[in-house]
Length: 568
Image (cartoon, rainbow, N blue to C red; front, side, top):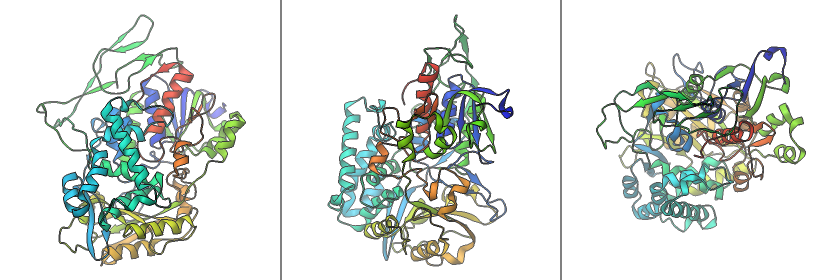
């Protein structure tokens, strides 16, 4: 696997792709003492977590895929990594998300569960018993959802956690089947949950959509209690060599524990309780808490902040990222003991398919992609003029707005897409980051992030349909639009090769494929020998949470390098 390009370049591990999964894998491997290089085809790192100047207005940047990040604080990987300690400020909107409805008050998921319950009136109690119960057990629910689907997650060790996970499962069964309407008496509550279920871009109701809805809706009201130092201080961690040449941290830190059970070719085995830097909490008052990072968080400056923090940590541990390198064949890879692909299964097979045994190659080749999203980025000269019949102004304070109308209207739109047709009124997601991050506005202009659900491979410019939907719920929207740019679904692959046909989930989100993702094998990450898949095509699936990378890296460390690290 060596060409002249890489003759003098030998690594322990090479990661192909710098999306959240690839970077999480690289960080995990590098913290274990391995020499790691990430190869990225684009000129910028981050995959689905990037923020770029699209040239629409001077100095204005746009999130090119993901924009809102409940998993940036909630996923087990990011809880261990601690983005806040790495300089990422996660801003929490007062309103996690909202659902405008024709001619009536919007349905609103406040950051506060109590406010949400009060606002939902007759359905407040039903929301509390379903979503509120999951929110109260968010750690157990997240542990269940973010597991490898092959083992019992470590977060389910208590009776309370098991009960919370069981109630979550029953809720998924209820909201993912035709009985999904029995709980609700008002259109507001039904629409409020359905808008989140539609993130899965599947016909509704569906079990996969219900799982998505209950998890993300629960996180809308959740948040970890965090110490709130005014200025974190980075201090070096003391280490002590052991007689056999390993390095042991003598400081108490937070991070990924590593225990060596064998030798490695780079850095040796290590025993460590965390990262090579410790963050001092300064003079925060004991017991003081902050909700920063809870709810549906938006990173200050854009999604790129998450990717940049991971890259900085990788480099601090001796790894590197090389951009502008597209891996098409084995000749494009440097010599290494392990290769981790943050790519589609098809890309992995294109590069190293000859090394993959037939019993693995066949299901990987049959991996199914889902329907798609077309993206429209707007530049506005003022806020979206959301209709506000009750005078509360909640939509204007929401970090995310689901634009699709009632439960029935959204289900119809998703059914149209599943049938290969463009919905006249498509299901849309909308986010104005300036709701919480004024730094995103430049010269009186602000970005507006939107996408609409469309059939896979669609080459339709959906700007008119998206604008019409926004005008429907925000009369006068056209008057604040300065310019816009559409990326049809068929072109989404051009800036992220994993989005086949515009499938931003990197694989159809069905209950079967969420479990058997990408294959129904005991180890869904290992394709052959030292070759692993670590993208959203592996468990637990789509989202900016880093868990596919962590799960794959953990297996590679054990199976290739003899290093064991704990499950998260």
